[in-house]
Structure formats: C-alpha cells, structure tokens
Image (tube, rainbow, N blue to C red; front, top):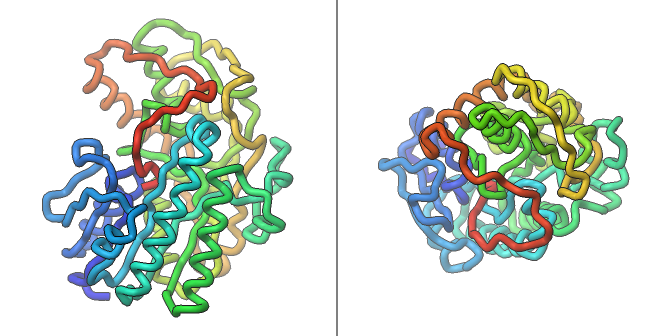
Amino acid sequence: MAKDDLIVVAGGGGFIGGNLVADLRRQGFTRIRSVDIKPYDEWHQVFDDVDNVQADLKDLANCRRACDGAWKVFQLAADMGGMGFIETHKAECMLSVLINTHMLMAARDAGVERFFYSSSACVYNADKQKSEDVVPLKEEDAYPAMPEDGYGWEKLFSERMCRHFREDFGLQTRLVRYHNVYGPEGTWEGGREKAPAAICRKVIECKLSGDHDIEIWGDGKQTRSFMYIDDCLKGTQMITDSDVTEPLNLGSDELTTINGLVDIVEEIAGIKLNRNYNLDAPKGVNGRNSDNTLIKERLGWAPSISLRDGMERTYKWIYDEYIKKYGGKVGPRAVAPKGAHVRERESARA
C-alpha cells in the first residue's frame, strides 16, 4: 500500500488503538482515520493531523462512513476491560458482536483490501487453564469451544465471522489472539485497567500514603504472560500484512505469577509491601500462557521485550500520570467489584 492510502483504526481512542495510530504516523502514513465512541477528551491519544471521528460503531451506518475509501482497517473497537469488568459485564461485552458484524459488512461493501481483527486469549478452552502450571496454549486449543463466558464467546464467534467473510466474500481478514497487552498510554484506574496497570497504581498509592498493605485479587498464584505494547504493535502490523489467514497467538511466552508481577513492581518502586489476598475478587483462570511456535514458524518472529523492562517503562508513566492528576496525594482507592455494573462506555480494547 502507498503512504497516502487510507487506514482506519476502529477504537483509535483507546490504549492499543491510540498507540497504533501514533506508530502509523511515525512510519509516515498520511491518511489515518481514528474512530471511537468516547468523547475526544477521554481518548488516550489524539492527533491533529488525523481524521478523528466520534461514533458508535455498533451502528451499521457509522461503520459504512468509517470504512468509506479505506485500503486497510484495524478493527480494535470493543466494550471491555480487565477481569474486574468482563466478569461483571458479560452482556455488554457480548454486544461488541454488533461492532464486528457491521464493520465486516461495511469493509466488504467498501472494497477494503485488508481487515485486521483483534481477538483474545479469552477464546481458549477453560479446561486447559485450570492449573497454575499451565501448558502454553496452542491456537488449536480454542476447540472444542469452552471460552471465557461472555467476552470470550463473543471473540470466538467474531473470529468465525472473519473466516467466513474471507471464504464467502473474499475480504482478506487477518486475526490475532492478544495475550494481556500492557504499557504506557493505557487505562490505570477506574475499573477497566488490567493487572499490570492496577498493580503499578496500587504500589504507587502505598508508596505515597505510607500504608504498606496492598490488596491482591485472588491468591497471587495465578500464572499469566504479559506483552509490552511495542511488541503488540509490531506483531499486529506484521500479521496484517502477511499471508497467514488462521488466528495467531500474539503474546509473550514469559510466564509469571501475579505475585511475581508484584515482586517486579516492588523492586522498581524500591518498596516492600504486606500482601492481603482478596479471594472473593475476580481473578480469571488459574493459568494462561502463549505458545509461540506457530507465529515463529509463519513469521520468523515473536514478542521479546522482557516483563521487567516493560514494567519499568509502564510504572514510570503511570507514576507521572498519578502525580499529574492527584498532585502527590492519594486518590480514591479501587475496590473489587461485587457484581455492581459500572455504566461507563469505552472501547477499551482499542
């Protein structure tokens, strides 16, 4: 594609979407349309030289306007957040199927050359994630289907739609399954933040307040892998431009426990905390890690930024944002949700 071909980033006001727009600009692409449901002052990043559009992409007419004239579409928009959100907002998460359906229809009718869809590791069979000593998840482990309730089912269904739009209509769809993306310019408070950002914020609160008690959701033994945003951006664009049509894992294979993640942030912050485990809080599956065999075979590449390096950059950014917002004082402490719905609208996947 040419540098002046139109690229659409659906969900461009969110974390991954905002960073993707920034990266495309750095590469010299001159026609970028960023679309998000949130008011502009809630977008994570806004650029004056980008066609910024506030629109609800659950509406087909808005999707048609978004895709008009586009050469490439990155469909990142979704209503989601961290585990505290998706476990208590299953219906809202599943409504994102309207975004994916209408964006596929609009892209097909507009003659889009490449359509990227961001799926999730939440599509994987829950029976394979019961133990902390998890075997890394291969792409084939999504079937027989038993994904995360709500959010995971929507993602798996939308993957199949992408496949059939390619088979039936010739729309060149590309799919990845993201594994826990983190980094600067993301959500770090408010209930939709994910574990790396939440732990950074909690450690910062302990450091500023002098209260060295930190609450951990679950028993801290849950295992995860976390991918830094720079690896996410590179992999997303490599897969979009490749000839790989099946879903690919996009995640780090560096496994850690939640306790291990806290250890890293404590070391970065220069503090040691007393851990209180909230066993009633949402914690997700016991173990999840990415098997990167297939992406290495198909692309000759896999995410490689270490968790320690990525968390150091992320902690510094969140610390600066925290001081900027609260002036060195401690803001309101987050509490684990108990089923109450937080009625805020955000395309947080983006």
